[in-house]
Image (tube, rainbow, N blue to C red):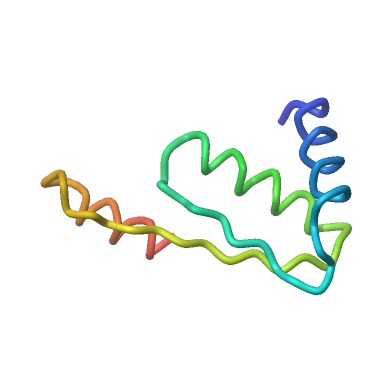
Length: 74
């Protein structure tokens, strides 16, 4: 992954993250949220951060239920 992007995310978290709390990632399963998840997991290798994911299936699309199941299985 791009080291510049990793540095930007790391610097952002260091500056804004309250070390007494975890991080909740709104996770759609799309490429943007997947990339952010990977960046957070990379960050967590050197920092004691707890990461939780949240996904909401609004049921607006037929395939959204299957996508929610796939995300839960991940």
